Image (cartoon, rainbow, N blue to C red):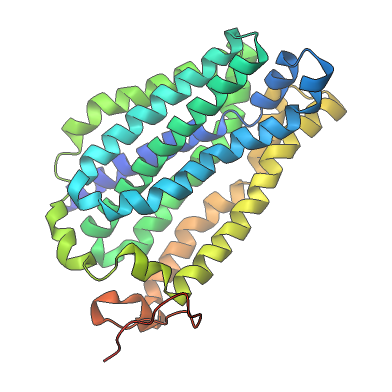
Length: 313
């Protein structure tokens, strides 16, 4: 690919990550007060916070379960198809979530909320898997820098989501943020097959990833250490998302627009630091242990009997 084509492809991937994370995060300041309004009985009011937490975590659970499976079959499915189909599911699920405003029955309200988050989680897993696959195959010479840029797009979307959702809520009500963002994602579904034509030959992944199967990855010590660090950081972020909106709304009477603006600030540092960390990882990447190189059949297997060791040279 030419330099201009690579830049254009990276911009498209950043847009996909950016708009998908806006769709993921716009409900943070909006859903807790909406759920509190729909809970009309005492028993329903007591379970509002619990259901809010489960609605948030359902998305992450689906991503965790679906991602390794999709990663295993990315060559068969195709990265471009995964990217466009993931955007279609995320956009449709985001618009569907906006319809819960018109549902008064508590049970139906929760069913639509859960279903839309399941669909959104699966679509996000498709989109993320395709994005990282394309980044790894088309930007092999500076993968860490590209991943840092994509992480910056992810962080920007996650930051803008609550603030833009709160602002659109103040202007046009609860459904507007979900319908508008969902529509922008669906526009990308129409345009991406034309503008992202050469995402790479997925057959090229065969020789690169033959040894890096999911079972082997799950027996690698450094994979588990990295995953543990990510889980701790994500859990800390998730606790804030689940509780802060309801707390600020019930204790101080803040509306969703103000809650979204407050939640804007704690993600700014994430946006600013991601490309810097990616650049540092590219510069000092030679110090990464050889255990990451599965093509050499060398890895640090976990010492527990549950996980078999791999042959070593």
